[in-house]
Length: 300
Image (cartoon, rainbow, N blue to C red; front, side, top):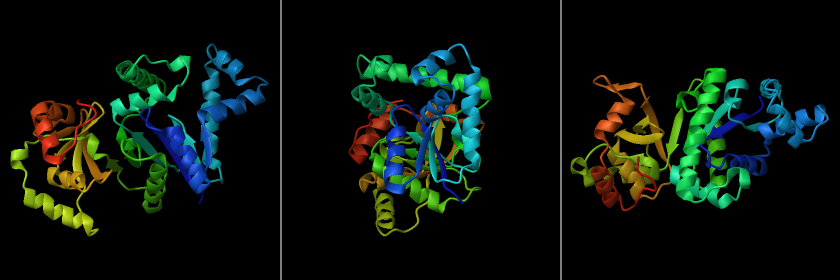
């Protein structure tokens, strides 16, 4: 069976760059919405610029693009699809969502020089515009298709690119794909720099952290850190000692399992949003930073 991987995720998470690495390292053919638009433009005898202008008053072109995505379900080639909605339209795919710290994402797009259509005055300006674009896109896809692109249960792998290079991201994707079974629960590999504590370090045992460090160093199985997701941020629900051990060992990714997201219930009738709001405190975060010797890029 051919390899079909879809790539979507946060703005500034490196989706296109990672797809190029998948092509270079693993010989996957790359398709994107841009690729499909160019194909349609050729068929209609237009330039891509003319097609973009035409699409402003002809929404039926979106249906053609959706149809081209659906057709990829029958591809016999090994492919990676860089598209916001491919996970929804293309069948029998391994679906990857790339996430990254929002401040780092803003720094990336500011330095990327993407042209006047994406001009940012500074990093803070980029943060604000990226948030607005994220909300706008998700609203549009929800209205048009009835789906939430930021519902992580839609994906097989949620992979944090905050602290790893695009070639490493490609390696991780293919390794996880090699172990994947279609009925598996989503795998979360999150940067230690994006896991926020919900408990005080007074409840932390240095001995327990050391024990987990030993297990990790000796490639012994360690239970994934249990996380909740609220407003796009990852909070540790259970597994502070395990998370700290990964910090100590300078690991770039922490295996996690999501127990609830946003309005989903966590415990005692509390949703993930309510739990995060009640348990998250900057004082806990700063103590956590001191304990583990690092600083977060962004504070929720």
